[in-house]
Image (cartoon, rainbow over all chains, first blue to last red; front, top):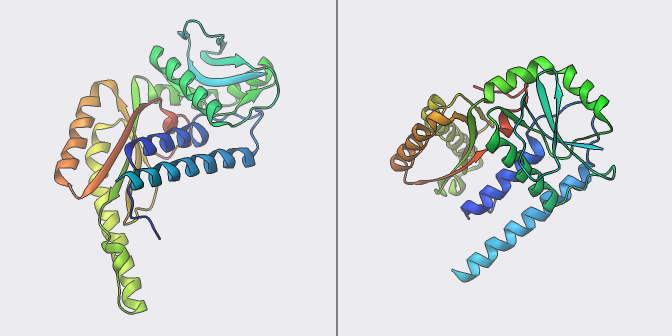
Amino acid sequence: MSEARLPAQHEVTLLELVDRVLNKGVVLTGDVTLSVAGVDLVYVGLRVLIASVASLEEERA
Amino acid sequence: MLYLYALTEHPTVLPTGTPLTAESLDGIDAVVGVVGDDKIEPTEQAILEHARVVDEITALNDAVLPARFGRGYADLDSLERAVAERADSLRAALDRVRGCQEFGLRVFSNSDEALSAGGSGREYMLGRLEARQRAERLADELHAPLAAVARTATRSVGATPHLLLSASYLVSRDAVDDFHAALRGLEDAHPELTVACTGPWPPYSFATAEVETE
């Protein structure tokens, strides 16, 4: 477990937004849904983005 | 295809200058936009756009159930059937969120103590168990004063020594100041913790009838 670094507020906000929009909210039946693979890609993209922001900040510090 | 942004109480105030329509279905309005093709690509841009439209609708209406991203309907008939199927629970959910905002909370521990448990395998496991129990007690202690000022709250189960609490609170607009006061109280009482509060959000976490609340 390498989790000593604490997430900055804006990273938490972005993750919380994506979590809400993708995983919460009303779901009705009979809709046209997304492919799960596509959603995973968004998550991977965000995590990569957040990881790179974090390492940039560490370099600056 | 009709793309669903939110369900609201009739009559709905729509943001000006947008091509949205509110389809009235038995007292429940479905706020939809027409999208050209039959595929919704889950790009970061599309997700943020969905969030922006839901924000606008929420700012103008008192009771809004945000839709999950990426829900499209072939035509008005299929949307109407989908709403009618769950009309009662949707109306109850609209009642619940009326006049409320959602706040998200994550509380992180700054302590590395849980990770440095040494000794034998047995001691290590006991140490881990104890740390987890301590984390759960602390999470309850943090959650209670916030839940007390919220209309309802939902919490993801299982505190860990690092991420102590991950929760959402549905707070009446009248009680937002009280909620923030309770939050400041926790921050003052626990300088060793990092408290990350986000919001106000549209009530995404309280928009489903099945949401587990406490």
